[in-house]
Image (cartoon, rainbow, N blue to C red):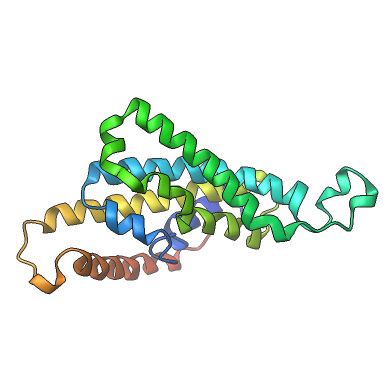
Length: 205
């Protein structure tokens, strides 16, 4: 059994949502044009992952998986609601994304305007849903491990988008060939960063 700390470190560097699985690429590419907006979206993703993965873990353990309802009644021990996982997970994610959107709009309107459509699109960000499905697949033994995974995954995604935004701000002053400007050079840099992050596979946890 892995410790929560090991899961946390692994989810940042080894199982990074962007560089290991290329999850959440649409928001990652579109919002990584400036560090300020990238940082805002990254923090929102951290919050959503940290809150929704433990909550979805509890729902999976006590409601959805095969035999999860046995605590209610022995007659429900054979009930398997795992086919509802996608719907339930998305509903939880969408609810918290709505809360984040309202909070950002109220307390940081300039950031809200900068993020535009990509803030509510966190609800369908495959990094968020992927985190919930990874949690389910890996069968973490307690909510502490699930929370460590969610928080680490959020930190990893935030780190990736902020690093990319910082690089894109710098290369805006570079003489990049016209066919590669914009998305083209961003994908190339992402691939190189993914290769660089592969060096963390040597970490012994």
